[in-house]
Length: 244
Figure (cartoon, rainbow, N blue to C red):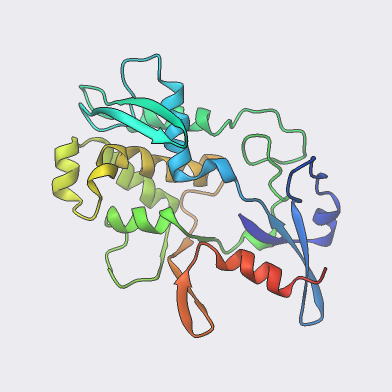
């Protein structure tokens, strides 16, 4: 996550702990200084979120985020988790409760404002008025038919679109998901409800974005006359224009 913040907000930034990245980068661009809030939220990516949710239900018979009747294992890093869907199917509301818990939304906040997991949110401000979201957000939106143009490299939508798609998918069996959403890889079918529900929960509960606020999903950005994947250009741009 990255956005411009005021000098006064930058001055209030918490000091990074040992081994942690700083919250604020100072940039000089065309003779003007900017302050950029940057935090990677490294352990809250889509694949990591699956593991966190499954970790919470290992002692239970099933997970309310998985497709009806699915039985398997999920590997993340060196860990393997039991992954079992309920015989009655996934349930969006129950899944969302698990996701909020996985986000550690109720962790103590030692700063004036936090997103989740006790992480400082940068203080908010005008820099958050226009939001760009990349990576798995675009992919899942395309697979869920929220984005219908196969050639699109960006799209404008609302967090509520993920909610609508999640509620629809969570009510389906694995076979129905496969039949209705042909863009989804077979290995992702059992987790499609979880993925969409997580993206909605991360945006609204995690980052406190209004569910009806327009956001822009991007798959690629222009860089030196080429379209490149949107996952890495931000870091490259920051390093290129920063004055150290």
